[in-house]
Structure formats: C-alpha cells, structure tokens
Amino acid sequence: MPTTKKESFYFGLMMCCGMVVVMTFYNLFTHDLIGTVSLKGILIQLILGFLTAFLLELFIVGPVARKIAFSLPYDKSNNVFVIVSISFFMVIGMVLLMSLYGLGTAYFSNHLTGESLLESYFSFVFKNFIFALPLQLLIVGPLVRYLFNKFFKDKRIVGSLS
Image 1 (cartoon, rainbow, N blue to C red):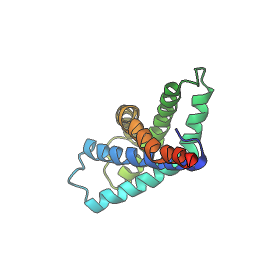
Image 2: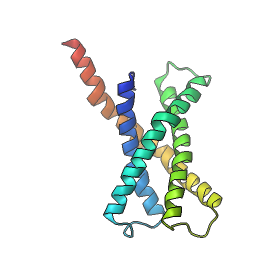
Image 3: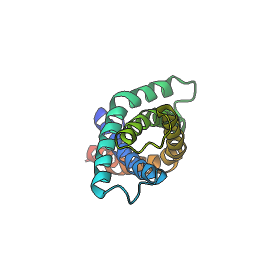
Image 4: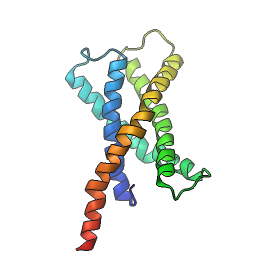
C-alpha cells in the first residue's frame, strides 16, 4: 500500500490504467461495439476514460472512499480488511461516476437504444458494478499491489539499506 503522496499518485495511475483498459473493452463487448469502433476510436476512448477516471480517483472518489472506509468500525490493523473496504468504496464511487461518463459518451455518439437516460444509467451501473467489483478485488487490485510493491517499495527498502 502507498505511504506517501508520490506513492499514492503512482499507485492510482497503475490502478486506473488497469481498470480503464479492462472496463473499456468490457463495455465495448457488452454493447456489441467490438469491430464497429475503429482502433483510433478505441484509443481515444482509452485516453479520455483514463484521464477522467484518474482525475475522479485522485480528487473525489479516492479521498471519499478512504474517509468512509476508515470511519467504519473494524480492525484497521488487519490490512486485508483495509484493502477490501477501500476497494469496495472505490468501486462504488468509480462505477457511479464513470457510468455517467459512459452514458454521456453513448448519448453523444448515438449509441443509446431507445431507453430513457435514467434506465440506461442504471443499466450501465448494474453491468459495470457486477464486473468491476470482482475485477478489482480478484485481478487488477492484487496485480497492481504486487507490481507496486515490486517496483516502488522494494527500491525504497534497497535504497535505505545502502
């Protein structure tokens, strides 16, 4: 887990990158857009999605999720409880806000299929949440924590030993 602002910044970059890449392709697949969106369009969606997600994580969702997670009554000395609670609230916040981003993208590219905006939004939230939570808890979260510890924490420890 990150302990400094600089480490938090890099950790957030890594986490957002992993989640945005997978969630972008998941949403392209669930909306039958694989093969209809050009490579350039996918790249633009990845970049815009990443920038949006990272700014939301850095300034809104991350601080709120940590505040809620640390205000709950559980044993904070157990890292697993801390990781799961922060991840859970991060997923909730990011799904709610990034589904708005997806709704806007779908609306402006005329890919909404006759549902009202509210129905589409709740459909997006449901589909994204059921995929994002296990993705975060079981795949991207552990992978990013492993890579973060390997590339950032190990270097700090080695640097302090010499």
